[in-house]
Image 1: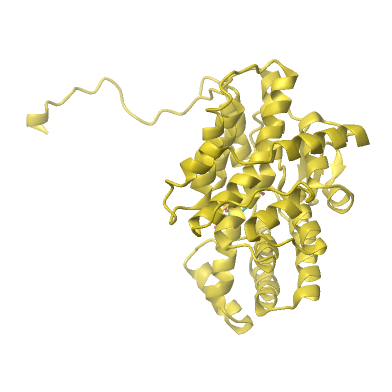
Image 2: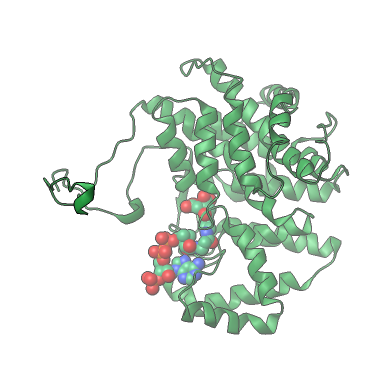
Length: 379
Ligand code: SDX
């Protein structure tokens, strides 16, 4: 090949950019956001503070955080025209499609584009971080035939999202666990949806189109959609005794076991370790059910069978158990992944603007040349 680079399916192991936003060591199971280990942020930070860190590169001072949180609170309400647009969405549609449509629709309200203006970048980041949860919650309420619930100023970001889903104020532990889940899912170097965000950002389109591209990519079952499939799998298995036969059948039919394996991690995903402890806290306080026992047995059997291939539980394996215990419907698990990953996509959008070079890779051509055009009568 003229460029001298070897073809790698799925760009496996191919660096596509310089970035200082996050770091993953797949062999040691390390994840850091802006140089800080994920365990530190999960334990000591909040999702909004972590979002600020990811996008602007520094932990905010108290004043900066207060101002940021105030702006987010101010922009949380749903646009009435987007609410009215959602009234035409089929109730049977998947919430990820509703989210992708709504994120793109936000761009209709902010057509002035000033990508070199820090104030424009901050305004877009605030609007997307503030409105994405509200739009997810609004679709959930509307597909049940109810009006969207307006955000409450006295509730913080995560408590407010759970409130807008159920109209009940969540238990402080539930809100804190949910907030940690958002921090854990916020950023993960150049995964498929973040790569989509960077490619889209590189054409200098608007940030709403960037997020809409990324939402569409995250929706796939091999990426963000896995957490929803994990619960379906636990339901299908139904009991601890059924785990081994189920796994053996998966291996026989060479079908992928959802929530396991990773392009980078060849040990247990550090986020899965934290999510497992969050699940245990929730089961401790709100009562256990056999899903957790099935999951633990499932992880044990998969490790026995596939650890030699470096296949371990990933972030999607326990996240579904946590969300289910919080009473969240399974088809909202991936939209929740999107609510969180918007922080990472925005950080990469901003970093890509600094690169200012459009993505345009090449290919290895496998066709022929100079073929004749066959008239339709002769085909
Ligand atoms: C996320 O990139 C990111 O960072 C993503 C993410 C993020 O934060 O953005 O971490 C979030 O998307 C987590 C992954 C969620 N997806 C799933 O849980 C779906 C199931 N996982 C697999 O589809 C798979 O592991 C991928 C997609 C995650 C990674 O696939 P790769 O790197 O392309 O690996 P592969 O398909 O080439 O598999 C290598 C081998 C194969 O066996 P052989 O053909 O070599 O014998 O491992 C096997 C695969 O069959 N394998 C699995 C498996 N994953 C890989 N076998 C059974 N079950 C699995 N889950």
